[in-house]
Length: 119
Image 1 (cartoon, one colour):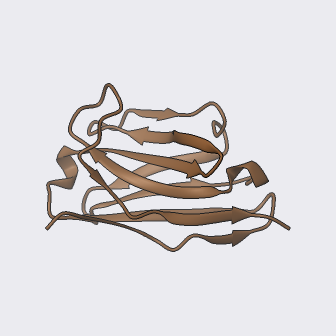
Image 2 (cartoon, rainbow, N blue to C red; image 1 turned 45 degrees about the vertical axis):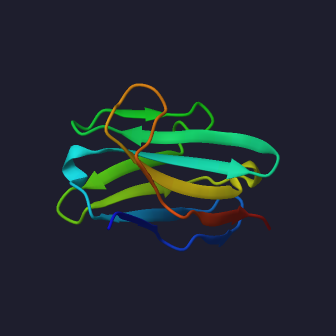
């Protein structure tokens, strides 16, 4: 059974930091490209960061310099380190696994975790 389980998000003050993790099981994690998305009721789902099987990384312009994606193939886990958080980073964050790097198709999704940035 395939599972992607995100860590609990939470409430963070503006300027603060939070690290999300996503633990994968049921498929070959080292053979999957991993992505983090976020979504709010007002906006379409946004690709925040992606890391390929080989370690190539892409970020949305809105998070460059503040967020860092990484993966640990031994622990079957992908991380999203979020620094200098802003209220506009408030969203439900989902991790996803893809077999194809290009495009926006994903094979598996996590259930999502709420991140709220507010004072």
